[in-house]
Image (cartoon, rainbow, N blue to C red; front, side):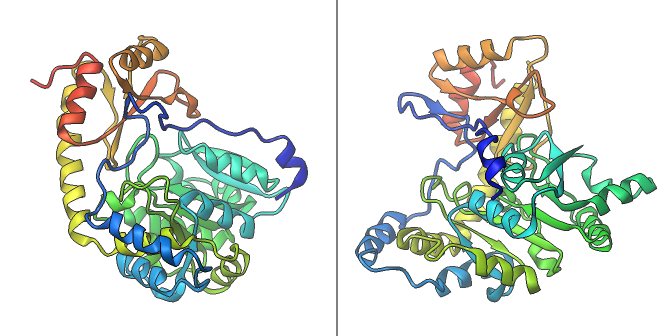
Length: 349
């Protein structure tokens, strides 16, 4: 990291409610975990009396099987954000420029700035077209050491078209620009990981905590090839995963039926909740376990406060660049979703 940048870069807000009396719709995590997780965790506690195997062979194998990439390409990290930081640390130097989507995850800009880099923002729904329309756009790619793609995008929820993403990766490779693809929520879809492209210009960041309902576990990984993979492996911290995270993570990554059931439930409930919310708000189409809602001329803080008084925490999305009248709500199970709708004064007719 760049020491001067560290001193001048503030933290950014996130969802996540610490009050146990509130139903938390501000964080986009699965309300369910795979059967058997508690037993695996309990067994791992005894193993945690020793340092973990720093090679993490079982975790790497499970991750590789889950997304269809070579085991050798997987580098374990303590969650998706650790994966993002590691990718930026080995890619960026002070003075570099980074192409970032907006509105999108606020940590991209923060992590880039911690490395001494400067953010260049492009609307998330125009990012994959950069380089196709003008010489200035090609020059923009050439000026940027790194471009970040979030799929599905957070907070809006749309997943990137695989063909458009691959074409963007090709243009970035020609420009000498590395592409970091954040797939924290891609497991909720049946779309292929960008890791299957096996391009040396691509780094993929993955998180286990959202899909498997274990945000406090802090388990994730990056996927890369060639020299970038070697740099990531060299730079990662020793024992980058605790033993419980590694063993529970490997177990979760193999629960294919749980993933299928989660996708089906979330897709069905997302459609139902969206249809209900559209009676009051403008709702962005989503492939993710959350919906971004434009509340119009209503005061966002009042909407958030009203829901909170009804026992439900939702995310004030005005903290995302470019959004000034939005909230974001997670998709949970049917009973919880009904409580969300009631808290927002919406009827599921």
